[in-house]
Image 1: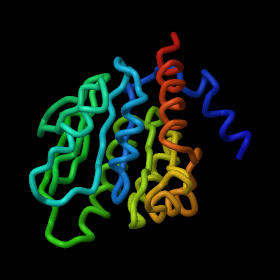
Image 2: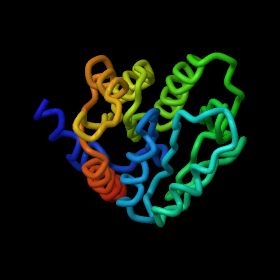
Image 3: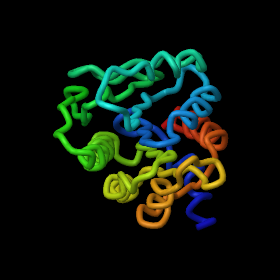
Length: 209
């Protein structure tokens, strides 16, 4: 594992080639406090978009306002057909499933049933992995359900980087634990440490060819 983690920060692994890359974050119970901490530490001007699939009630949400009050980042809801831009944070709207393709974001209503979000985040992760390849960073935050395992594995298969929130900083550890045990997360860290890792990745993805 030490050798694997060392390789993640080697410049040759992260140099720019192909799509600009993206960070995809999923979270459920306890995910919002982790997002607040993470986004409060990230700098503006990241060289890739950040997509957030936070499990929300299927009612209007002010998550964008909550996060914006505690961060200098540009945080907005994802819109159908929108091409994600570097340095922007995109939230998946409540009750919607998101995938990304060459035409931009594709949003579809979640089917009824509590478990539909679980399958939706797998598809989100897989679509980002397919679109960005090894320039995908997938992060699993606090949550009370095992979600995103198949998508997490797909990110690993294409050579992306996977992170899971540490037990000591998670309100609910079921989701990060599944990502560690079954999704084989590369890095287990606090939101503070994740922010530092994202900055390192951002610097290295901007290295010249």
